[in-house]
Length: 343
Image (tube, rainbow, N blue to C red; front, side, top):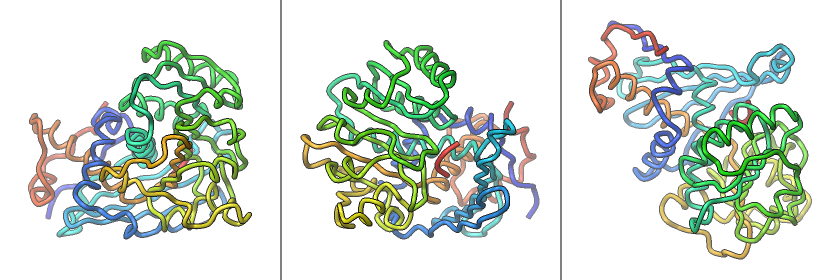
């Protein structure tokens, strides 16, 4: 076996796969029958700089592992909060075929998971009014991903950093959103869609304000003692998650209300796989909450799509070899790889 793994850097990850393509990659593996409940749980190791995470996943055709760092102190140094790399392997041989920038993969994968949920949960009878909490990389990426699946009438940005909020509102205008401005937590009262991608550990808004039928997406934490939404919203909402096991292990947004006695584990209405299979929300008169914590199967699905796109680009074709063909494909000379929140 010859040939080094293909290095796919951050600009290449962004160039090779669009937000819509990442959404389709996730929907595709769910349609093929992947069961997120069987996905291995992440391993978390406290380290001096923050937290080191190990996230492995495998299918018959592929295997992969993300090693991610969460370094809260990096922001003060002008460095990304999320760091890391993703190693993609051929499934049958476990031969490394690609190494991807882990932060870029996360910045593509996490919004794609949210957008897939939005595709099924948000009302589809017209442009949506979005209230977006956060102004970091995940907030920008979530705006891109939401626009890949829904038209927006307005974007309201709520963030601790006023300048960051203004930049994101201007970015929304540049993407063609008719109205974009900064706002406050009170704006959720008129929202069709609320997206939370922050590092908050306490609720961002009063859940009683969320209108019936509105969709709330919370992605900012994967810790059992941190949350972005309050007990009032969880109690009112139909709740959807990536997997019940992962949510009941890591989702503070759900675990804290459960510890308070406000809800029980059975309060979870369904999963992303349920939505992808066509099992739609049951009650249009209550809010819908999608809480994600980030799972390794999602990284694998998106990494495979990026890798296939890289092979297609290198060969000048519109498609890419399947996993069984990667032994030959990855022996070609390595290309140049192209010109913060949930992990």
